[in-house]
Length: 72
Image (cartoon, rainbow, N blue to C red; front, side, top):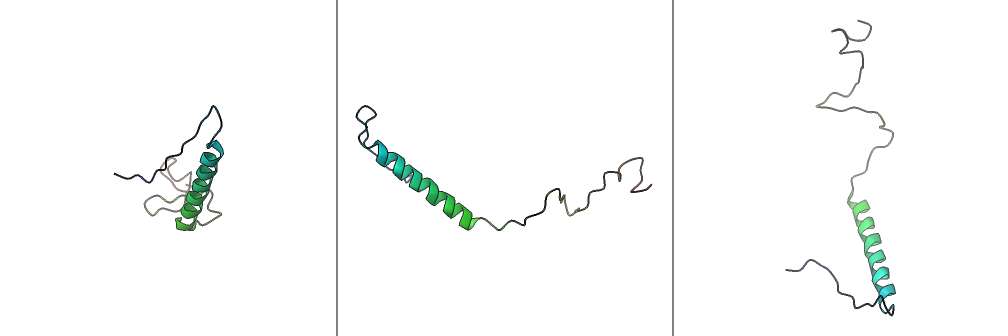
């Protein structure tokens, strides 16, 4: 079974191959990040605090107080 991994010969003692391992790792992280960004749906900005639960989009904190709505 292949998982798409690579094997690198390296040595912590001599430092041989260590730079290559980190270079390839950084390249793969950047590539993955770019692919994920390109595939991600565009998010609508400025929706801070918006509430959308089962179709309810407005939030009235006083709606459940004492059985009345706003002003009741």
